[in-house]
Amino acid sequence: MAKSKTGSFWLTETVQLDDASPAGSRAAGTIDLGAYVDVGDQQALAIEEVDFIWQAGIDFGGDIANMLVANGSLGAQLTDLNPGDVFVRADDNSLIASGTINGDATTSSVYEGTDFYPDSFGKLDEARMVVNDSLYLVIGNDNTAVGAADIFCTARIKARIVKLSTKDWMAIAIQSTASDN
Image 1 (cartoon, helix red, strand yellow):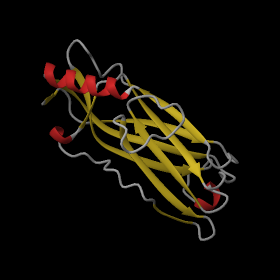
Image 2: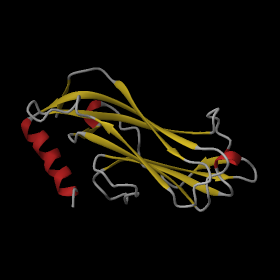
Image 3: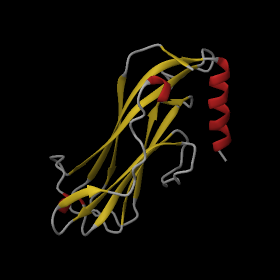
Image 4: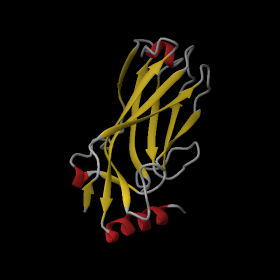
C-alpha cells in the first residue's frame, strides 16, 4: 500500500486549558501538514503512534490536586478533520487517537480512563494514513473545573512520509471527504 519516503520522526502540538476554566471547557490546536502531504505525488503522512502528555502549572508537574478542583477527567482527541472545539464520537472516521485520564483530587492520584482507543498503530502497513493538510488536537475537562494551575496537553505524533499508489491515495481521500459532512 505505502512506500516509505522517510524514516520515522516526531511532530508535537501543545494545547492549554487556563486555570479556573469551568467544567466542560475545551481548547484546540492545529498541526500544519502542508510540508508533508502532496496531492500531485500521492504523498501522505503515515501515523505510527500518538502519545498524550499532561502537565500542570508553571513547572509543568503533574499534580492532579493543582490540575482539577475536584474528582474529574481530562480528555484529548487527535483528528484529521476540524471538529472545532468539540469531541467526536469513536465511530467518526476522522478520529486518529484519543485518550482520557481520571483524577482523584482528594488523594492526588491519576488513573486511566475508559478510553482505550489504540494509539500505537504498529508497522507501516498498519499505520494511520493521512492525506489532509492539517491535524487537530482538542482537549477538555469534564465533571469539575480546572484548578489553580494551567493544564497543558502535548500530543507527540510518530510519523513518516509515504508515497501511496494512486488507488490507495484516492480511497483515503474519498473516505476523508465523505467524513466531512
